[in-house]
Length: 322
Image (tube, helix red, strand yellow):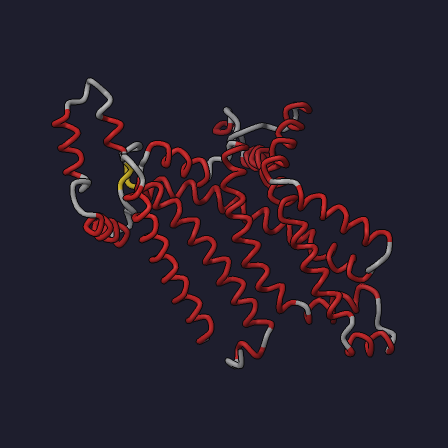
């Protein structure tokens, strides 16, 4: 448990560092939300000055950071000037949508990558393995932006998949099954984009780990005793290769999360990505900080999940030997 405790402490320190960095960069950036209000002739300079004083923009950066930390402890996460509400109400909905997207994409990517990586490792050097490696190399060379645009063009051409958003206009009047089906249709394009973008790296890492394990003496001994096929690969070889793959899970969650922010903007999925972009353009600083902190929290949780799996599969970690 000391290993997991250290990882949790490291995650908390990372959150603190990210929050300080966000505030420092916001202070370095020119202008703020209230500077845009000065351009409106209907708003008097005294009103703008009063709003700046009310929200502490005439105070030093350290004071503003301390005031924001107090709001985090109260569960508000600051105040949005553009939406005129606490940031928490914005983050809860958008973070849930991002979690749905990245969670489903992570699940599908691993469900495809594990059997494909194991199969290609067992078929190493044959034509199907070479075809698989060539396909993954091609996908690696294609940016997520291109994949998303191609899928959007395909969805527009076939007229069967919705483009943009999370629900149809008549979503409120649908039944439970119809709502789930409508949500699934809206998930097709962004989830497929994330899966195709993350699949090549997952397959290659799983394949490399399995190739190393398949050359181990205990696997050769199992083959000599007549154990082969799927039983050898999934019952004996795959658990032995699970140690590096547990760490890969945390990295894949972080990569999917960072990629999902861009994909959400392109496909119109109402997650943290569009919220972060709109807040940055409006210079709504507390929404920007809250969205970045929520993304960082997801990445930390992904790393902790990988650490929990690592503790479960590696007795050396449980005993504190590494």
